[in-house]
Length: 134
Image 1 (cartoon, rainbow, N blue to C red):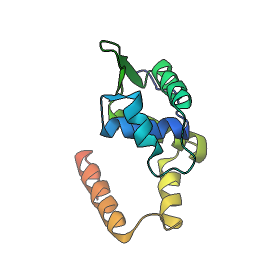
Image 2 (image 1 turned 180 degrees about the vertical axis):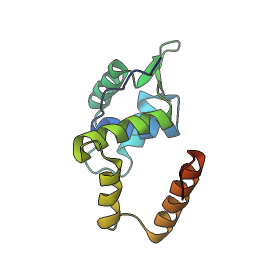
Image 3 (image 1 turned 90 degrees about the vertical axis):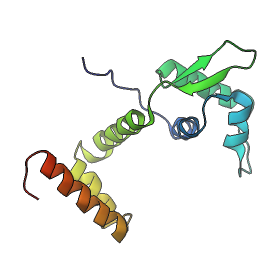
């Protein structure tokens, strides 16, 4: 059975997922400290709580209610989550074309020479795995 697709994330929700993938479980206060590091206009606890509730409703995170302070953890593995976000980005901005996405990165100079070399290795390795020519 195919995995259910995940609802898209806002930029703020994506930033929270990035934090939770790095440090979990995390309480609201721990996340509030992490979110507000280096910010001149801090996020309020209520705003953060709203974002966490939305992420929970979307199925991206789970809340552990076993202790007095609720702890949050990703419900989605980082690789699956990033793949889902990338698929949505590719669909919305590039008409579903992976080539158009990569072309945009390459032509805009957003990929370094070292990254291009790594990308070439990945393409060759995947072509070999699939029985294609390099």
